[in-house]
Length: 365
Image (tube, rainbow, N blue to C red; front, side, top):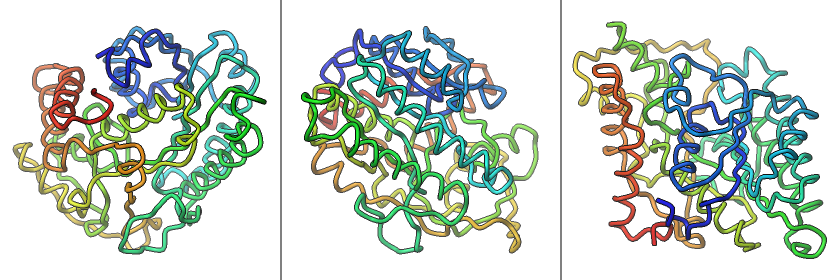
Protein backbone atom coordinates (compact mmCIF):
# COMPACT_ATOMS: atom_id res chain seq x y z
CA UNK A 1 0.00 0.00 0.00
CA UNK A 2 2.96 2.35 0.41
CA UNK A 3 2.98 2.97 -3.37
CA UNK A 4 -0.48 4.52 -3.35
CA UNK A 5 -0.80 8.27 -3.91
CA UNK A 6 2.67 8.33 -5.46
CA UNK A 7 4.14 7.01 -2.20
CA UNK A 8 3.64 10.46 -0.66
CA UNK A 9 2.51 9.30 2.79
CA UNK A 10 5.25 6.76 3.53
CA UNK A 11 7.35 8.17 6.36
CA UNK A 12 5.31 11.36 6.60
CA UNK A 13 4.07 12.73 9.93
CA UNK A 14 0.31 13.11 9.63
CA UNK A 15 -1.76 14.93 12.26
CA UNK A 16 -5.45 13.93 12.36
CA UNK A 17 -7.99 15.76 14.50
CA UNK A 18 -11.08 13.72 15.31
CA UNK A 19 -9.16 10.47 14.87
CA UNK A 20 -11.36 8.55 17.34
CA UNK A 21 -14.50 9.17 15.27
CA UNK A 22 -15.93 6.96 12.55
CA UNK A 23 -14.38 8.64 9.52
CA UNK A 24 -11.19 9.52 11.42
CA UNK A 25 -10.59 5.92 12.45
CA UNK A 26 -10.84 4.69 8.84
CA UNK A 27 -8.48 7.45 7.74
CA UNK A 28 -5.94 6.45 10.40
CA UNK A 29 -6.16 2.82 9.29
CA UNK A 30 -5.40 3.73 5.69
CA UNK A 31 -2.58 6.11 6.62
CA UNK A 32 -0.82 3.61 8.89
CA UNK A 33 -1.05 0.93 6.19
CA UNK A 34 0.73 3.32 3.83
CA UNK A 35 3.59 3.80 6.27
CA UNK A 36 2.64 7.18 7.71
CA UNK A 37 3.45 8.20 11.27
CA UNK A 38 0.02 9.21 12.53
CA UNK A 39 -0.62 11.53 15.47
CA UNK A 40 -4.27 11.76 16.46
CA UNK A 41 -5.82 14.56 18.50
CA UNK A 42 -9.38 14.13 19.68
CA UNK A 43 -11.70 13.73 22.59
CA UNK A 44 -12.40 10.21 23.86
CA UNK A 45 -14.05 7.87 21.39
CA UNK A 46 -17.65 9.09 21.04
CA UNK A 47 -19.25 5.63 21.12
CA UNK A 48 -18.91 2.23 22.72
CA UNK A 49 -18.02 0.05 20.89
CA UNK A 50 -15.52 2.29 19.12
CA UNK A 51 -14.05 1.46 15.73
CA UNK A 52 -10.82 3.25 16.60
CA UNK A 53 -10.38 1.31 19.85
CA UNK A 54 -11.14 -1.99 18.14
CA UNK A 55 -8.54 -1.40 15.42
CA UNK A 56 -5.66 -0.99 17.92
CA UNK A 57 -3.63 1.00 15.43
CA UNK A 58 0.00 2.11 15.92
CA UNK A 59 -1.15 5.72 16.32
CA UNK A 60 0.07 8.31 18.82
CA UNK A 61 -3.30 9.15 20.35
CA UNK A 62 -3.63 12.47 22.18
CA UNK A 63 -6.87 13.03 24.05
CA UNK A 64 -7.70 16.71 23.78
CA UNK A 65 -10.24 19.26 22.63
CA UNK A 66 -9.72 21.52 19.62
CA UNK A 67 -11.18 24.30 21.75
CA UNK A 68 -8.15 24.01 24.02
CA UNK A 69 -6.09 26.34 21.86
CA UNK A 70 -2.92 26.23 23.97
CA UNK A 71 -2.79 22.44 24.22
CA UNK A 72 -3.59 22.02 20.54
CA UNK A 73 -0.81 24.39 19.51
CA UNK A 74 1.72 22.76 21.84
CA UNK A 75 0.82 19.31 20.49
CA UNK A 76 1.20 20.28 16.82
CA UNK A 77 4.46 22.09 17.62
CA UNK A 78 5.77 19.05 19.48
CA UNK A 79 5.13 16.53 16.72
CA UNK A 80 5.97 18.78 13.73
CA UNK A 81 3.59 17.16 11.22
CA UNK A 82 3.95 17.44 7.45
CA UNK A 83 0.18 17.51 6.88
CA UNK A 84 -2.94 18.05 8.98
CA UNK A 85 -6.33 16.45 8.31
CA UNK A 86 -8.93 18.34 10.36
CA UNK A 87 -11.98 16.16 11.02
CA UNK A 88 -12.85 17.04 14.65
CA UNK A 89 -16.41 18.38 14.88
CA UNK A 90 -19.82 18.18 16.46
CA UNK A 91 -21.14 16.12 13.58
CA UNK A 92 -24.84 15.46 14.27
CA UNK A 93 -27.69 17.62 12.94
CA UNK A 94 -30.17 16.65 15.66
CA UNK A 95 -27.66 17.29 18.44
CA UNK A 96 -27.11 20.78 17.07
CA UNK A 97 -30.70 21.64 17.98
CA UNK A 98 -30.01 20.58 21.57
CA UNK A 99 -26.51 22.09 21.81
CA UNK A 100 -26.40 24.95 19.29
CA UNK A 101 -23.77 26.96 21.16
CA UNK A 102 -21.44 23.99 21.53
CA UNK A 103 -21.94 23.12 17.86
CA UNK A 104 -20.99 26.60 16.66
CA UNK A 105 -18.07 26.86 19.07
CA UNK A 106 -16.59 23.45 18.26
CA UNK A 107 -17.03 23.60 14.50
CA UNK A 108 -16.08 27.23 13.94
CA UNK A 109 -13.61 28.12 16.69
CA UNK A 110 -12.15 24.62 16.67
CA UNK A 111 -11.26 25.15 13.02
CA UNK A 112 -9.83 28.58 13.76
CA UNK A 113 -7.64 27.05 16.46
CA UNK A 114 -6.35 24.35 14.13
CA UNK A 115 -5.49 26.87 11.42
CA UNK A 116 -3.84 29.21 13.93
CA UNK A 117 -1.70 26.35 15.23
CA UNK A 118 -0.66 25.44 11.71
CA UNK A 119 0.33 29.03 11.03
CA UNK A 120 2.92 28.87 13.78
CA UNK A 121 4.46 25.48 12.87
CA UNK A 122 6.74 25.62 9.82
CA UNK A 123 6.74 21.85 9.27
CA UNK A 124 3.08 21.91 8.13
CA UNK A 125 3.04 21.89 4.33
CA UNK A 126 -0.59 20.96 3.78
CA UNK A 127 -3.97 21.23 5.54
CA UNK A 128 -7.08 19.32 4.49
CA UNK A 129 -10.14 20.83 6.19
CA UNK A 130 -13.03 18.34 6.23
CA UNK A 131 -16.56 19.76 6.39
CA UNK A 132 -19.86 18.44 5.00
CA UNK A 133 -22.32 18.59 2.11
CA UNK A 134 -24.56 20.47 4.54
CA UNK A 135 -22.30 23.53 4.30
CA UNK A 136 -24.28 24.70 1.25
CA UNK A 137 -27.36 26.91 1.44
CA UNK A 138 -29.88 24.16 0.75
CA UNK A 139 -32.83 25.31 -1.37
CA UNK A 140 -34.03 21.73 -1.98
CA UNK A 141 -32.98 21.92 -5.63
CA UNK A 142 -33.08 18.77 -7.75
CA UNK A 143 -29.52 19.13 -9.05
CA UNK A 144 -26.29 18.79 -7.12
CA UNK A 145 -24.49 21.60 -5.33
CA UNK A 146 -21.24 22.79 -6.85
CA UNK A 147 -18.23 24.36 -5.18
CA UNK A 148 -19.30 27.77 -6.49
CA UNK A 149 -22.71 27.67 -4.75
CA UNK A 150 -23.24 29.85 -1.66
CA UNK A 151 -22.63 28.61 1.86
CA UNK A 152 -25.51 28.57 4.32
CA UNK A 153 -27.60 26.32 6.52
CA UNK A 154 -30.90 26.61 8.39
CA UNK A 155 -30.15 24.28 11.30
CA UNK A 156 -27.24 25.06 13.66
CA UNK A 157 -25.09 22.19 12.36
CA UNK A 158 -25.41 23.18 8.70
CA UNK A 159 -24.88 26.86 9.49
CA UNK A 160 -21.76 26.02 11.50
CA UNK A 161 -20.35 24.05 8.58
CA UNK A 162 -21.08 26.87 6.15
CA UNK A 163 -19.34 29.28 8.52
CA UNK A 164 -16.39 26.89 8.86
CA UNK A 165 -15.96 26.99 5.09
CA UNK A 166 -15.88 30.78 5.18
CA UNK A 167 -13.23 30.61 7.90
CA UNK A 168 -11.07 28.31 5.77
CA UNK A 169 -11.55 30.51 2.72
CA UNK A 170 -10.51 33.57 4.73
CA UNK A 171 -7.34 31.90 6.00
CA UNK A 172 -6.49 30.66 2.52
CA UNK A 173 -6.71 34.16 1.09
CA UNK A 174 -5.15 35.98 4.04
CA UNK A 175 -2.43 33.66 5.35
CA UNK A 176 -2.09 30.64 3.00
CA UNK A 177 -2.50 32.59 -0.21
CA UNK A 178 -1.77 30.46 -3.27
CA UNK A 179 -0.05 33.31 -5.13
CA UNK A 180 2.34 33.81 -2.19
CA UNK A 181 3.15 30.09 -1.80
CA UNK A 182 6.91 29.57 -1.72
CA UNK A 183 7.49 33.26 -0.99
CA UNK A 184 5.70 34.33 2.20
CA UNK A 185 4.58 30.89 3.37
CA UNK A 186 4.97 27.16 2.62
CA UNK A 187 1.50 25.76 3.40
CA UNK A 188 -1.44 24.91 1.13
CA UNK A 189 -5.02 24.64 2.43
CA UNK A 190 -7.98 22.83 0.88
CA UNK A 191 -11.55 22.16 2.06
CA UNK A 192 -13.30 18.90 1.22
CA UNK A 193 -16.96 17.87 1.44
CA UNK A 194 -18.74 14.52 1.26
CA UNK A 195 -22.29 13.20 1.38
CA UNK A 196 -23.88 10.61 3.67
CA UNK A 197 -21.00 8.30 4.54
CA UNK A 198 -21.62 4.74 5.74
CA UNK A 199 -19.53 1.66 6.44
CA UNK A 200 -18.59 -0.71 9.22
CA UNK A 201 -17.68 0.60 12.64
CA UNK A 202 -20.17 3.46 12.97
CA UNK A 203 -22.23 3.40 16.16
CA UNK A 204 -23.22 7.09 16.32
CA UNK A 205 -26.76 7.87 17.41
CA UNK A 206 -29.34 9.35 15.03
CA UNK A 207 -27.64 7.94 11.95
CA UNK A 208 -29.60 5.59 9.76
CA UNK A 209 -27.27 2.60 9.45
CA UNK A 210 -26.15 2.51 13.13
CA UNK A 211 -29.80 2.83 14.17
CA UNK A 212 -30.64 -0.16 11.96
CA UNK A 213 -27.79 -2.22 13.34
CA UNK A 214 -28.65 -1.45 16.97
CA UNK A 215 -32.30 -2.32 16.43
CA UNK A 216 -31.45 -5.63 14.76
CA UNK A 217 -28.93 -6.54 17.47
CA UNK A 218 -31.62 -5.94 20.11
CA UNK A 219 -34.34 -7.71 18.09
CA UNK A 220 -36.25 -4.44 17.83
CA UNK A 221 -38.14 -2.81 14.98
CA UNK A 222 -36.29 0.02 13.27
CA UNK A 223 -38.18 3.32 13.37
CA UNK A 224 -37.84 5.33 10.15
CA UNK A 225 -38.60 9.03 10.59
CA UNK A 226 -37.90 10.52 7.13
CA UNK A 227 -38.63 7.73 4.63
CA UNK A 228 -38.73 9.93 1.54
CA UNK A 229 -35.64 12.05 2.17
CA UNK A 230 -33.13 11.64 -0.66
CA UNK A 231 -29.42 11.43 0.07
CA UNK A 232 -26.23 10.39 -1.75
CA UNK A 233 -24.96 7.23 -0.03
CA UNK A 234 -21.29 6.32 -0.23
CA UNK A 235 -18.86 4.04 1.55
CA UNK A 236 -16.50 5.84 3.91
CA UNK A 237 -13.50 4.86 1.78
CA UNK A 238 -14.87 6.81 -1.19
CA UNK A 239 -14.45 10.35 0.18
CA UNK A 240 -11.32 9.33 2.09
CA UNK A 241 -9.66 8.46 -1.21
CA UNK A 242 -10.47 12.00 -2.34
CA UNK A 243 -9.13 13.57 0.85
CA UNK A 244 -5.90 11.59 0.52
CA UNK A 245 -5.61 12.49 -3.14
CA UNK A 246 -5.94 16.20 -2.31
CA UNK A 247 -3.36 15.78 0.46
CA UNK A 248 -0.98 14.19 -2.04
CA UNK A 249 -1.30 17.12 -4.45
CA UNK A 250 -0.87 19.71 -1.69
CA UNK A 251 2.22 17.98 -0.28
CA UNK A 252 3.75 18.11 -3.76
CA UNK A 253 3.15 21.87 -3.82
CA UNK A 254 0.46 22.05 -6.50
CA UNK A 255 -1.36 25.30 -5.72
CA UNK A 256 -4.23 24.56 -8.14
CA UNK A 257 -5.54 21.97 -5.67
CA UNK A 258 -5.58 24.35 -2.67
CA UNK A 259 -9.29 24.97 -3.18
CA UNK A 260 -12.75 23.58 -2.33
CA UNK A 261 -13.70 20.05 -3.42
CA UNK A 262 -16.83 17.88 -3.44
CA UNK A 263 -16.44 14.11 -3.16
CA UNK A 264 -19.90 12.68 -3.58
CA UNK A 265 -21.18 9.44 -5.13
CA UNK A 266 -22.54 9.00 -8.63
CA UNK A 267 -26.20 9.76 -9.34
CA UNK A 268 -27.23 6.12 -9.06
CA UNK A 269 -26.41 6.29 -5.36
CA UNK A 270 -29.15 8.89 -4.76
CA UNK A 271 -31.69 6.87 -2.80
CA UNK A 272 -34.47 7.56 -0.34
CA UNK A 273 -34.08 6.50 3.27
CA UNK A 274 -36.70 3.80 2.69
CA UNK A 275 -34.76 2.43 -0.30
CA UNK A 276 -31.64 2.25 1.85
CA UNK A 277 -33.45 0.25 4.53
CA UNK A 278 -34.77 -2.17 1.90
CA UNK A 279 -31.26 -2.59 0.45
CA UNK A 280 -29.70 -3.35 3.82
CA UNK A 281 -32.58 -5.68 4.66
CA UNK A 282 -31.45 -7.90 1.77
CA UNK A 283 -28.20 -8.60 3.67
CA UNK A 284 -29.46 -8.76 7.28
CA UNK A 285 -31.94 -11.49 8.13
CA UNK A 286 -34.85 -10.67 10.41
CA UNK A 287 -34.68 -6.91 10.00
CA UNK A 288 -38.06 -5.23 10.46
CA UNK A 289 -38.94 -1.55 10.27
CA UNK A 290 -41.80 0.84 10.91
CA UNK A 291 -42.32 4.29 9.40
CA UNK A 292 -43.30 6.92 11.98
CA UNK A 293 -43.18 10.44 10.60
CA UNK A 294 -43.21 13.21 13.21
CA UNK A 295 -44.36 16.58 11.82
CA UNK A 296 -42.94 18.31 14.90
CA UNK A 297 -39.44 16.84 14.51
CA UNK A 298 -36.50 19.20 13.87
CA UNK A 299 -36.15 20.12 10.20
CA UNK A 300 -33.84 17.99 8.07
CA UNK A 301 -33.31 18.55 4.35
CA UNK A 302 -35.45 16.39 2.04
CA UNK A 303 -33.06 16.64 -0.92
CA UNK A 304 -29.32 17.19 -0.78
CA UNK A 305 -26.51 15.92 -2.98
CA UNK A 306 -23.16 17.03 -4.32
CA UNK A 307 -21.98 17.60 -7.88
CA UNK A 308 -18.44 16.18 -7.99
CA UNK A 309 -17.71 17.09 -11.62
CA UNK A 310 -14.79 19.27 -10.56
CA UNK A 311 -13.05 16.42 -8.71
CA UNK A 312 -13.66 14.00 -11.57
CA UNK A 313 -12.37 16.31 -14.28
CA UNK A 314 -9.56 18.26 -12.58
CA UNK A 315 -8.37 15.72 -10.00
CA UNK A 316 -9.27 12.58 -12.04
CA UNK A 317 -10.95 11.17 -8.95
CA UNK A 318 -13.34 8.26 -9.47
CA UNK A 319 -16.03 6.46 -7.52
CA UNK A 320 -15.07 2.83 -6.98
CA UNK A 321 -18.02 1.21 -5.17
CA UNK A 322 -21.62 1.78 -6.19
CA UNK A 323 -24.53 1.87 -3.76
CA UNK A 324 -25.21 -1.86 -3.92
CA UNK A 325 -21.59 -2.74 -3.12
CA UNK A 326 -21.59 -0.15 -0.34
CA UNK A 327 -24.66 -1.63 1.36
CA UNK A 328 -23.32 -5.16 0.95
CA UNK A 329 -19.92 -4.32 2.44
CA UNK A 330 -21.47 -2.36 5.30
CA UNK A 331 -23.98 -5.05 6.25
CA UNK A 332 -21.34 -7.80 6.03
CA UNK A 333 -18.98 -5.80 8.29
CA UNK A 334 -21.56 -5.72 11.08
CA UNK A 335 -22.60 -9.35 10.58
CA UNK A 336 -18.99 -10.52 10.94
CA UNK A 337 -18.47 -8.34 14.00
CA UNK A 338 -21.61 -9.40 15.86
CA UNK A 339 -21.55 -13.07 14.83
CA UNK A 340 -17.84 -13.85 15.14
CA UNK A 341 -16.13 -10.74 16.59
CA UNK A 342 -14.19 -10.34 13.31
CA UNK A 343 -13.15 -6.88 12.11
CA UNK A 344 -13.47 -6.63 8.34
CA UNK A 345 -11.93 -3.16 8.07
CA UNK A 346 -8.52 -4.21 6.72
CA UNK A 347 -10.15 -6.68 4.33
CA UNK A 348 -12.56 -4.01 3.08
CA UNK A 349 -9.70 -1.56 2.56
CA UNK A 350 -7.72 -4.16 0.60
CA UNK A 351 -10.78 -4.99 -1.54
CA UNK A 352 -11.43 -1.32 -2.20
CA UNK A 353 -7.85 -0.72 -3.33
CA UNK A 354 -7.92 -3.79 -5.57
CA UNK A 355 -11.17 -2.65 -7.19
CA UNK A 356 -9.68 0.84 -7.67
CA UNK A 357 -6.62 -0.68 -9.34
CA UNK A 358 -8.85 -2.60 -11.73
CA UNK A 359 -10.49 0.71 -12.67
CA UNK A 360 -7.03 2.30 -13.16
CA UNK A 361 -7.83 5.06 -10.66
CA UNK A 362 -5.03 7.63 -10.67
CA UNK A 363 -4.03 7.27 -7.01
CA UNK A 364 -3.31 3.56 -7.49
CA UNK A 365 -0.84 4.03 -10.36
